Image 1: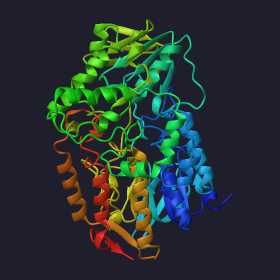
Image 2: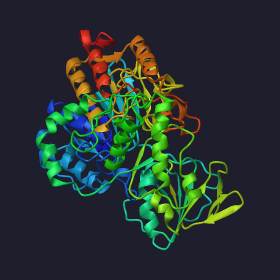
Image 3: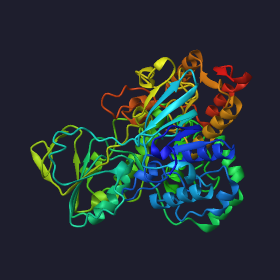
Image 4: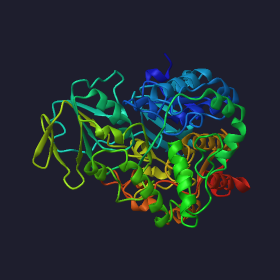
Length: 544
């Protein structure tokens, strides 16, 4: 047992918070430099979001061969995925393989939350306290807490009165949950519900789905990974990854280079050409619509062409016209909320044991001892599943008390909206970095490639600034202000503003409505980050 485990202060060069993909890679880079590092993780193992999201049907919605590390060629070649879209258990095998392969566990502490991080201006170090009463000191602190890691449970009336089983998709039990013979309620129809509902419906005696806002969803067309396809991918990984990094979204989406981003306008092409593009992507499945016509996020008329196309496809999947009508999103632009990828989601509503309950105009009034009350009807159920989303992007960070120079509190600095130059650092908080945090573009690009790029940026920054007692770096307030102006300028014409989504923080009562992510695309974001390093970090306040 180390001094740290006995609650005695210990000094590190770097402390990393979070053992998801970004945190693990950050720790690996620090270890490669020969610096001392400690990683804290609230869960009992690696995986980050995937450690907690164990709900039935949980799987990635970006293709497995893309949703994987690219920094190590041997790792890319040795790992073989079993499915086009990896399931949560397989993703966990991959994460554990990475942790073992790069000897990460020796510097990790699990079942430990970071509760506070205070900057000592005299020592120019961060003092970090944990839920285990440990106090450690670090020159640099890296928050790899993830943008979808803090689950949200609405404060329902009577939440404590309900006597049945309660489950949260974002914090699912480790042990297997069987709904055979049960009456089950699912609250929410976002991505986790879209994935879990078809599987739960196969077990449950009766399933009630309570929907406030329907989701646009595309068939994933998941299946075993074709080995010839995998072989071609591995032979061309280097070129393919370059295409990803140079693209808007950071992923190519299927068919091995056959589906590149479409630079055209959906309005300017002929109807025939537009439908050909949409049909091709529909047949391929998954999220490849994100790389369709360039103006889908900024032009309502263009967006409507895709929304209408998907609505017609959705109608054909549901037998009952009234149910189909309820399942069609009409109040927000397609992709204004996270687009879902499903396996038989809409077809599930054709089952006799599945009932859709719209709560858009008549919300759930309360939870009773036996179920849920909507209007004058009580739905008696044995289990309730809260598929109610996340306090996205900032939720996990705000759970840590963070104080920078002059005792400035980060949440006060972020009052109204988060502020972070390049999405990496905030003014007044020296040597504190965010990965997959606010004001970067994690919401709309491949999280794997973004994480890798940000980790490499932070790693080089730590190497440039060094470990001298006086070493510190923070963005100037002017640089931070200009980045926020640029971010808002880039995003001002986006149709995301028209949806009440987690992109805008609008899914959490009381959370300030603000665009949380940079919409300039991955390639532009990389260029901006590189510019931030120019002239020896001229946009920063630096001491070496």
